[in-house]
Length: 284
Picture 1 (cartoon, rainbow, N blue to C red):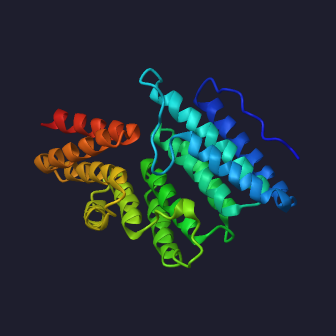
Picture 2: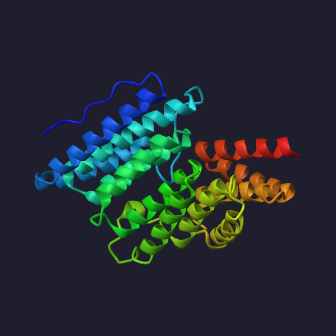
Picture 3: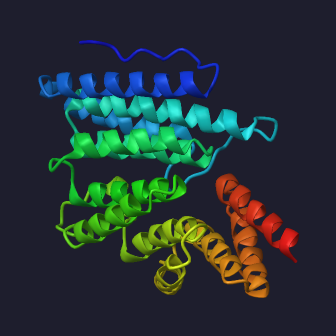
């Protein structure tokens, strides 16, 4: 079986993009070969789960590095763990898990602001998912890719991905939804719709109404046990309030987001909230 090689560390943006494409090709080949080795499925899928947990940047997790560890370094460590996990899932022939993990790599890259690379991983994840991965995974991937498209000012593609996400959501609750995507709900999808609308609104004011409705719906229906995730919704809502020039409301929302992110030790959410607070202060 062909091993997944660790790509050389890129020196600039162009080399980083090339390295990402090479990694995607290797993961695709690993996934194809994995279809011929079903006896490994149980062990490799378990290994993927372990690697993802160790990443420290899962959907409901944060980086657990020491205060001296730079944020980018923690993100890159998480990306590598997800890459390893995706390779394990590919060897196991587990389409849904492999595609979900590629989506997590995409999300980590987006956190770092590398939207071109993030989009490349989301594209490949959906290409591999085709119709084989579970509808919940494909739904989430479309929602994540919509956000990346919006950040890259591709409005038509962003809206198309959101439409696809909502269409697939109607098929997500089939009794076979994988546990790692169990958090997908209407509130979660509204959160991503809001994130995307916030990005679109930077150049298209028509997205404001849709985004505000989605985020209000997300806050209203957000599951009470998922406290950490509510910080992300509050931060997106604060960004939407900034776009509506309501700085008092934005300040109130971001204060709540910072409090929750700090109380739940969520580095990623705290960084995003503090960045948004800086924007509010600059506009005050």
